[in-house]
Image 1 (cartoon, one colour):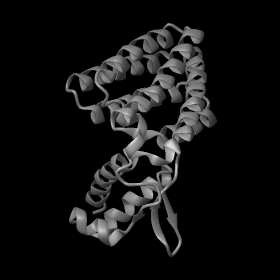
Image 2 (image 1 turned 135 degrees about the horizontal axis):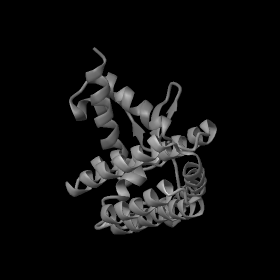
Image 3 (image 1 turned 120 degrees about the horizontal axis):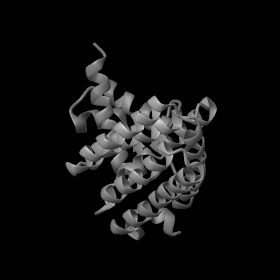
Length: 227
C-alpha cells in the first residue's frame, strides 16, 4: 500500500530538488504543504515525504510549528563539501583497490558497463542513478563501514548538485571516461592511481557545478553568492 505514495514522493523530491539547486526556489522560501499539494495535484502525504527527504539531504529545514523553508547554503559551502568529498573518495579508491574481492571487482566492471548504456540514452538523471551505484560499490569495497557510511552521507547531501552538473554538455561522456580509468586502476589494484583519479573525478564535479551555475546566470539566480 505504501509503494505508490513513496514513489510519488520521490518524483516530487526530484522536482523540488532541481528548483532549489537552481535557485528557482530561493533560500529562505517557505514550502507550504497545502500549496505544494495543490500545485502538484496530490495529497499532503507525498509532499510531507518529499520534504522529509529534502531535509535529510540538507536542502530544506523543517521547523517545529513553522513548517519547511529552503535552507541557506552559499556556493563557498558547496565547494568546501566537494573538496572534502574528493578526499574521502580518494581514500575509498585506495582502500578498494587494496581490499576488493574478485567478485567485487567484477561487480564494479559490470556496473561501469551499465553506466555506459545509461549514458548512451542521454538521460542525465538515469546516468546519475547508475553512477551513484558505481560509487557505492567502491565505498563498500573499502571494507570500512565507518568510511562508507560517512562518504554516503555526503554523497546524499550533494546529490542535487552532482546530478545537475551532469546536464552540462559533454559532462556525461567525460564522467564515463573518468570511470573507465578509475575502474581499470581499482581492478588492477593500483592504489595510488585509484585515489588520484577519484580525487580528480569529484573535484571536477565541483568545478562543473560552478560552470552550471554560470550558465544559468548565477548573478541573477543566486544573489546570496554574489554578496
